[in-house]
Image 1 (cartoon, helix red, strand yellow):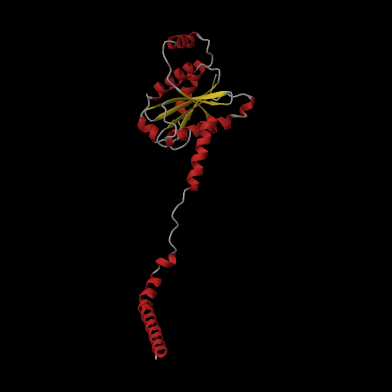
Image 2 (cartoon, one colour; image 1 turned 90 degrees about the vertical axis):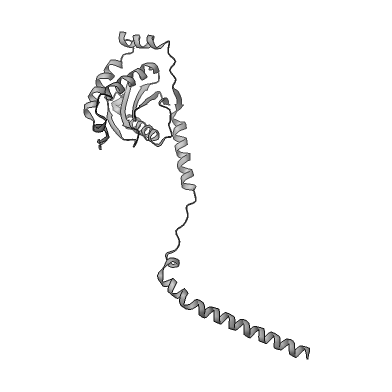
Amino acid sequence: MVKVTIVGRVRDGFPIAQGLIYMNKGNVYLSYYMQQAEFMLQEISRGTLVASKMTILIDHYCFNYLVENGVVFIVLCVSTYPRKLAFHYLQDIQKEFEKFDKTLIDKITRPYSFVKFGSIIANITRQYIDTRTQANLSKLNASRKQDLDVVTEDMFSILQRRRNSETMERLQITPQPASSIWCSPLLEVIALKWTPIMIIVITSMALVWATIVLKDDFIVSS
């Protein structure tokens, strides 16, 4: 059964629409799975999930997503729901989405504010709740001759890669900014003023030392 559906933009990982939510136990786990769906959307936007179609296993459910023309369509289903039917569902949503003006979609700035499309998702979802309807059985039978080329991965592996990536970024050595005192105009003035004096003092001390050494050598040799 279809549980959660969201639609988002690839370029910025922004969620623009969602469908009806079908979760048990008073939707106690809803926020968790919504967070995971939004996490997937961000990973697709970042380019860490590069497949245009993918199934991601999580608990007793699975996320299926489809990327088309810069838009991501994600659905959470129970693990026993036929994957081919889930992608038929996403394709139906994608076809309806293509009917809208793309410039309007790009202007959306509030999460899930494309309410009009949310109602369209809800209508399509109702058609896919029961896998035993004649329409859905026909879709499954028609798909038997087709190979569904979809990458499958576990959510835990994706989360672990993200943690490892963040750890490596924190461990990277970043150049420390030079102390402001060494770049200050005051230090430059002091250096210009005292450097010649220090050179004269050091040179004089070297000459005095050399004179003393030569004098001692003369006295000893005498």
